Length: 322
Length: 120
Image (cartoon, rainbow over all chains, first blue to last red; front, top):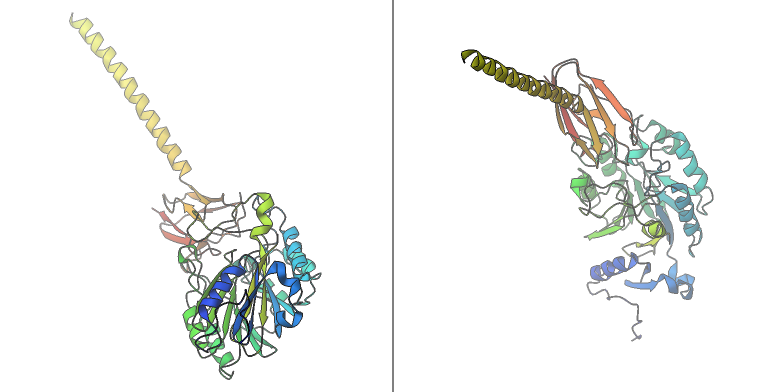
């Protein structure tokens, strides 16, 4: 019997590969900068300050990528007069990660006003990130004025319909969804009939053991409907993914990190690299939240995701820019 | 005696009449001013204010964005009567309503924001 390490969380009692309470506890720690890795069915966590002590073998999963979100290039109000600067700081953070991510996901609101120069600036800044491949899904700020035509031209090669697509990396199946087009008055985000049919078809022949990562701008679970923080028809999409043992849903839009585990599905939202927004119901409206200038970087961030083959859940770690 | 009474009465009537005229004028101006200010819809805090605006035919309604986030003003129904470009902070959009009816609209970026113009 090996001595239980101080940082080891609850052991897997149900033999299903994931101890839910342990995972949730780890997720809570992740918000303050903890690194959680699944190894042999046990969730180990390490404070980010101890990262240098851990061996690369212990830390590296077989798949590692980063999610950034809501760069809102073009925003220049008091909440953050320099969104290009904070995006650059996010890139520096990414370049400083010990386990270099293989690629990046941007979960939308790349630009603030869908202006060409705004997209150009983001492309320019991301060029200096070590991971060269970036996969995008649009936010509502990216499809203004032209029903997404410009977004599709820039980032939609190989996508279907309104810009959805899928790809595989090291045995994990990624699905980029679009839930910011054709929004109806009084409504939430929407996937639409055509996209739902594509989702059903896209996963039809995949083995149940294939890990799935879904990424879309607006949360696919009901975070706070009063502020439009949810997707009307996401239940149908999730029903098509029910058979899979590990589903990770990565979203943006709400400019704060939040997580929820429901059965085999882990939902996670990322912080923005531009400005924070208030917690649900804690303000009159979900607009940009001003914080003292010296605190700004501590409420912006990136999300690092690692996967170890054979284990269920992906290790998702949020880190702030300061 | 009768003369003074009648003069007094006339004076009183004049004073009252002037007062009445004055009050009448003020309320007319006040009402006119009210009408002017109600032809504007202020967008702030993810809300259209007033949410319901009733105007006479031929009125020009101006939406002004006082929020620190961009918004749009778009018809909810198929009429597509209202369709603004994206309005950043302090930008305006105006539309003259020449036909009676109810015109529901929303912000296409933040669909929870809704409002309507009733043209009578």
